[in-house]
Image (cartoon, rainbow, N blue to C red):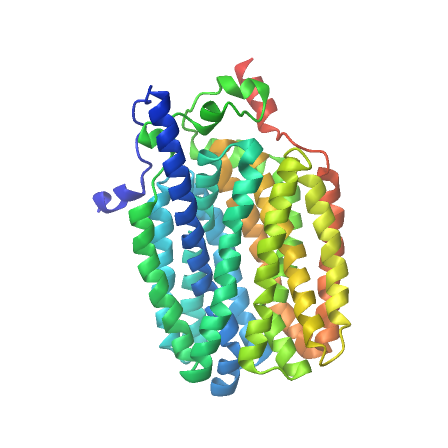
Length: 451
């Protein structure tokens, strides 16, 4: 059995290529190939994560589920996904991200098919929990790719461009699911995305590779002469133990904890808006299933623009400082929630505009908090640190499931919007202390060890 798991081991480092022209050529080729592969792969993860969200109206009509029950399934996915994101982050820092990411995508497709073949709440819960677990195999490998193939001064731009991939997936899935729901029923709304993702997993195996050093290339910091701290130029590319990664560079890192708490509130808002907007439009404004899903997809279009603006502005306007951009976007979240709440019925254009602005505002810090977590930890702990804050984020996402669904059931949509505004204000207050922070405590820790 040990040979089966060998594919998850990191590829060994090859002797470094000395020819500068060859290094330039290979780095150019592989950076582009790694980027578009993980872009497509992470977009496809959203096909199997959001399939249920946009199939919810069909389950209400066909099987008579309540908002609380549907919210419970969302909470189950969020909890298992969040826990998996943390654990797979620890594993991913010491694994081959090529196979790690591909295997997770294939398994999400398998469990979406199982979900579509079921009818009871118990079996839905089992298969959606398993789907959530393998959803956690998507983000950490990407964090590993982004920190090993793209350096600090450019990372906000590359990360935000990659981050648009999941917005693209989340934009396309309501149309795919909405069409399947309208013409074939909710079961096919689960089957179609599942089949696409299984094929996508095979694509990732073919396209992705491990670190630059596994291809005989120098570390990205050496190649671009781009070090986060002055003395990092002398840092050796040693392999850290899992204990060092988890305890020294994540759990003892105060900045990671602050970012984790902020992520909790941001994700409560993000999932709360993403999962409940279509139903809000159907119930309160008379939208059809397809029109509501289509309008809700503008949330992801705004997210693409917001993520790109956040990443590029942090690199080129704030000199790779992530704190100011996170705070400004969090303030925008509060204002845009209020704006969407008070749009009268039948103002369809204003609904669309405000959903776009909500996506713009929310996905800025959703992306950039992840960048900050990778940079305020150790390069070798990028997947673990982002996995840890991702775990906390999906505790917030769990709150946007059953608890927020029950609040909406008991106190109506006013209770729903007040809950989101509270989370927005809390996010602003938590992010403010990180306004001027650039270097994480890993630099201090490294200096102590060396002295």
